[in-house]
Image 1 (cartoon, rainbow, N blue to C red):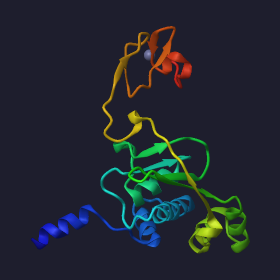
Image 2 (cartoon, rainbow, N blue to C red):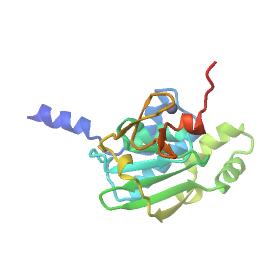
Image 3 (cartoon, rainbow, N blue to C red):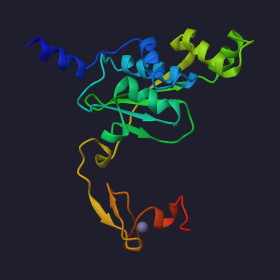
Length: 203
Ligand SMILES: [Zn+2]
């Protein structure tokens, strides 16, 4: 019985401190300043939503507005990930994320303050920029680092975890397209690549 309880506990880890997450990330070689900032942002998001631990039922969706360290940090802390559709990437080029509790529909968007980098350089003027940021992100307060705003976040039903993947076939390339990502032009169904959004060229 005790072994069973321990196994369950391991599957449902409680939140750790941000320092523990940074140490955990360092084992994978992610020690950049952005990782520290992202971990702190994710923890703040959970706290703002009143969550004592990452939900295990896919009821938390996080939208990250940049790539690089932030998605990794969010996945580490919240368990949200692309593979189960609880992590969304909207590439706005911003160090910002929105944490959405789909049970309550409460959502908090957290963005890094522009002044945070300046404060970091002021705190450690002799350090190289990346080093100064990494050290400053460990000592600045949440209020100095972030601004938060309650928002209304809407998702299409097909974007939610567990949605059944509707499927269409592109008439140009013959490839299947799931989750209503197809484009209809003059009644004809295309994938987004064939409709003009292709990021590659055949060679
Ligand atoms: Zn196509």
